[in-house]
Image 1 (tube, rainbow, N blue to C red):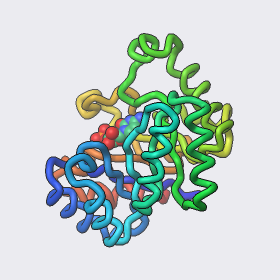
Image 2 (cartoon, rainbow, N blue to C red):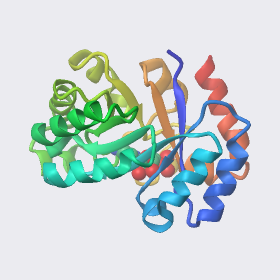
Image 3 (cartoon, rainbow, N blue to C red):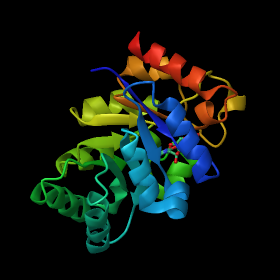
Image 4 (cartoon, protein in one colour):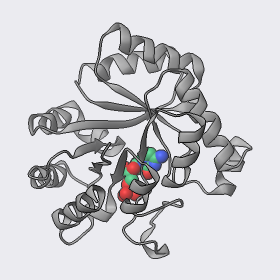
Length: 231
Ligand code: C5P
């Protein structure tokens, strides 16, 4: 399967996000990611505007709460007719099972996406929270994701092989993408790789934010990434 491109709409205003979305329209097959900032500010009308442009939508809310509260939030998200919704894998088995059941019961097309270890974590940060190293933590959470029938997972490109080995068949989404392997361009991301390398390792969809929207010519960068992904 060809690796897809998901562009994170993390710009400071709705107008800038919409302008970027419109300019990306001619490049076929892009998914747009609406994160916390955009959703809190611009809400469901913004999601609808992007859907009306014909994009598939990844609503990246990274839900983490008690099962019932997450399930109520999921039901509201299903009404938005989005394609992907993220929740933290560490919200646990009961929550994940409840959500996957709701999606089945409602015959929704929404794919739940479980967040494993954020790509902004390094080994030390991961150990502080999970008391395990990144590989062990991702491994546990990937297994949980699969056991609960969650179809997709987010991890860094460095854990793709591990996830494939531990929990085969998951749709693997990888942020932490940078155009060069240079430390100056990492921003707050710690575990990064280029689009081509993420594709070679078997990422199903890469998520790219700043390397596209902060570029002088975002469309050229997005086109180049799509070219790399089609190699
Ligand atoms: O700008 P950059 O390419 O680093 O953006 C990555 C995007 O992916 C951001 O919107 C961030 O919230 C999201 N993300 C992430 N790590 C995860 C899940 C999502 O960086 N584990």
